[in-house]
Length: 120
Image (cartoon, rainbow, N blue to C red):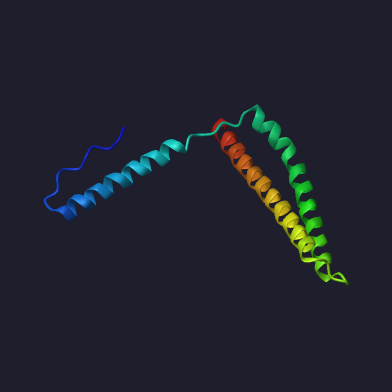
């Protein structure tokens, strides 16, 4: 339930401060409501079982793309700028995908730890 409205303030400044406090309380209540407890179900268990291999594969792909980019930068004769940009883009995308998958792995690991702590 939303917090009760503040009592009427005497001045415009006090009313503005009261509005800001109510707004902050409402925002905090919305955030708490959004932070629902996530369950570690079968789908998450299946994903957790395979995610380490996926992270390793993405890390290897990112390392390969970065090595190709470094080789392209130091090639003699130098590669055209469009090819260098394509290599840089591929390396960036590979690294981003690996980072996102690693973040998901950490999220699942936290969910698993919380789930195990509840059952103990």
